[in-house]
Image (cartoon, rainbow, N blue to C red; front, side, top):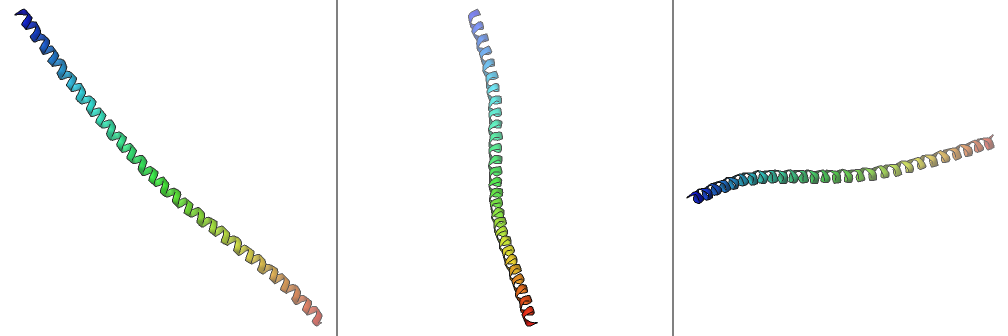
Length: 103
C-alpha cells in the first residue's frame, strides 16, 4: 500500500511537471509566433523601403538626364549667342569700312 501511495504521488508530481512544461511550451510558442510576426513586418517594411529607394533612384536618374539635356541646350544657346556676337562684330567692321569708303 505504501508503494502504491508513493507511485501515485510520483504520478501526480510528474503530471504537475507535465502541465507546467505544457504551459512553458505554450509561452515559448507565443513568443516564437510574435518574433516571426515581427520579422515578417520588418521584412515587409524593408522591401517597401527598397522599392521606394528604387523609385527615388529612377527619378534621380531621370532628373540627371534632364539636367544633362538642359546643360547641353544651354551650351548650344551660348554658342549661338557667341556666333551671333561675332557676326555682329564682323558686320559692324564691314559697315564702318563701307562708311569710310563712301566718304
